[in-house]
Length: 102
Length: 110
Length: 189
Image 1 (tube, rainbow over the protein chains, first blue to last red):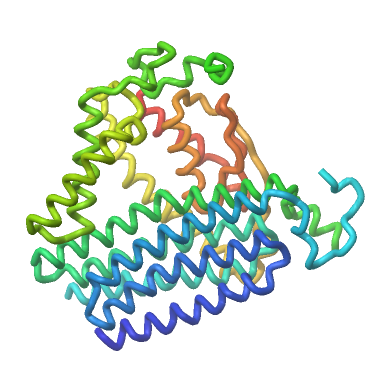
Image 2 (image 1 turned 30 degrees about the vertical axis):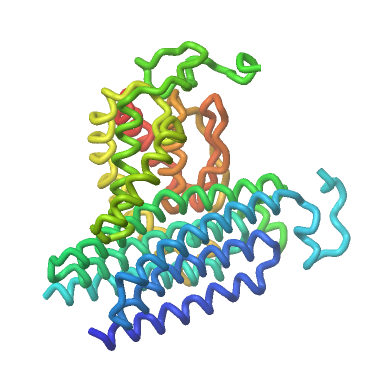
């Protein structure tokens, strides 16, 4: 069972790298935010698996709970901050299209 | 026996997590990426938490029961906050004026 | 100022039987204090996990303080006798919601792993008018729609007009309406 948890944790870490791809490549800032949110929710599960590996679930559950709350607050704050068009497309097109300035 | 059921639940959760990670990469635009990102991850978290709670609550001592209850608290918390976070991101996208991808736009591009 | 802020007065009350005067949401009843204290102290016991005198005393003091300051935030309605029935129906609603979420999850998983995914998905934006009246039931409906994969609530106006984004047409064809009927059942509207 210990080995199974180890493999599950490693697999979850690989999935985190897969979601990190979207956070790095993503064309707009909001796409990066989706990637970061996905990484956060996978990390919550990964923390508890690490707790099972170290036989200290009681401690790691608290850390996971705090991490889930922090992830939620971070996404809320960041999405309030990026509610404007300016700066959203700077990475892919330098000149905005006509009629976009709203 | 309980170990086997717990392992099955954790495997199911990993399958949902895989769907979420692959979906984020494959989907064509911002709005449709939110579908796998927000919800498949929530379901994967629910499944794997059920498995871990089953595994860790075996002796019915006070500490283990408290641990199981805390894991359930995490699941309840995520189930309340995940739609709210998704809604915040989609609201930011609408206010920023992102156009949703449709089959019609795909035909125009290609 | 207060009168201008209230756009539709009949929508503002949490329950139908609640008094609808201008100060209805500011009234505090002892039952809401007791309920808030019980919930807070239960969460304290769960999170601390120690039952000696020091931790219990600390929890008691801080829970009392928070209850005195913010009892009207957690349970804004003074109409507490209807709450147990509401919570009971809400708990009966949760397994149905979980089943629907599971079915929709499997549908989205099928879409994600399908090799010709770009042909299968057909994202579009749909809208409908909800007949739910109170804030709480609308929040529940919006969160339920978002929690079900395939549909995301984009906007819900104060008149109950819901705009949502669907990933293919079948996901959004029937489910939100069934969900609305269920939630109207739960909140007795």
